[in-house]
Amino acid sequence: MNAWIRTHRHALADALRRLAAQPGASLVAVFVIAIAVAIPVLGVALVRSVDAAVGGLDTDPHVNVFLTLDATEDDAKRVEAALRAHPQSAAVKFVPRAKALEELKATTHLAELLANLERNPLPHAFTVRTRTADPAQLAAVRTAWLQLPRVEQVSAEFEWAEKLGRWTRFAGRALAGGALLLALAVLFIVGHLIRLQVVTRREEIEVSQLIGATAGDVRRPFLYHGALQGLAAGASALALATGLIAWMNAELSVLTSSYAYEFKVVFLDSSTVLAVALGTALLGWLGAWISVSRELRRFAGQP
Image (cartoon, rainbow, N blue to C red; front, side, top):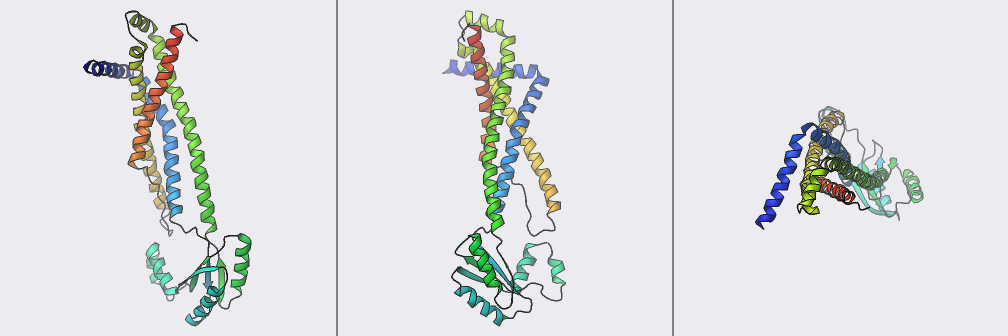
């Protein structure tokens, strides 16, 4: 056990020495890999942020019915009775104009402006859960409800949220494909860099094999080298993504300050951050293993 630990400690020390011996080349390699890793990290953060925003929206089939501003509570009761009696109505919720104004004040940055209004500009409204989301049937429902007395507008606002949800799910699948391609790129970059080191140390490797070094002994320092490069690149990618997300949130805060909803890019959770760091280390290790194994076969004259 002590010999195993000592062997791996020596291999790790050798990898660290070689990284420190060429700081410029090491930093360039880490930076190139970090950019490749940061792209899907940012993509995942953006998709998750949009998905979280869509998750807070109401995507169940429903129709909003707005009455005229001069509609009374008696008018609202008559409209409510007609809505409940309709065969496509699953549930009807009445939103009084006073409550709507209070909710608007609480959820927007316009509370001070709204407080200075002489009268409530919002009408009585109903939110009606429908039994169908079929566009043709909803069109018929809108036409019928627009004929009700004191009804000024009928709108179905859930459709865009459903479409946005479908787009975010598609973006997630596309992002997974892009991440796979970038992972292959990381394998290629690390493998190429390690291959150059193996080629430059060919004589040293052949001598070590003559005195009894196994393929595993030769491969081990290069595996640590690749894993350390991958780990450093993963940490750099996460730092780069964190900085860009902080900048985007600052810009979005200015852009959305006058809207009812404030959108923020949410960074990845700790488990995903750990997976990214370890994943890039594993990719570096795998790229080194493939490259070294291939070169050792070439040294031995094998195909």
